[in-house]
Length: 193
Image 1 (cartoon, one colour):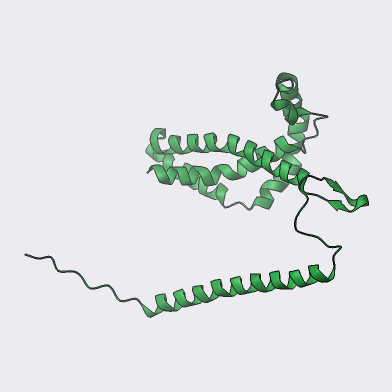
Image 2 (cartoon, helix red, strand yellow; image 1 turned 45 degrees about the horizontal axis):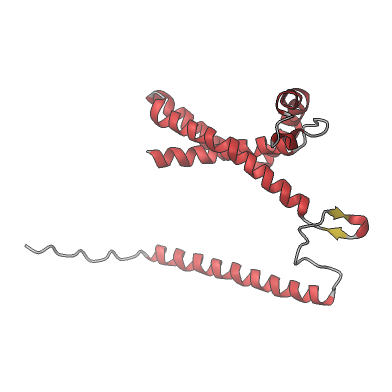
């Protein structure tokens, strides 16, 4: 007996309206971006002293000489991101494995809810917490101990140069890792179930 194909379900008028509205909003954003870019090209053409592209990556920032390079910013971003990922990924995967495989059933719900709540905290709150709470702790206790024990290692000496002030690449990496962990743990947990 041949299997009859079911007719395709009819789309609801609300779904069609929502799809059209979403498409129009997306198209509007693209038009606004292109318009802004075109206008900025006109401004840059009339004012040659304002140069945005190409950004001189090889130079630092020297406002007196009117040199606004991006080398220090790019370097800081790359190192901070790499360190944050090295801290966050193993921790988040460990949390996900614990929640899905090891934790008893009565703990899975509360731990999952806590992870979701941590993911909902805005990044500015993490940043302020890091500046006012974590940075002094890093400067007073953690960084001096790390400098004494790991400060002479070839690759890690970059992190521990100078006086430990708590406002540096290591502290920024730890704060960024704390921000990344809930998202990564949640995604890893969902992928493993």
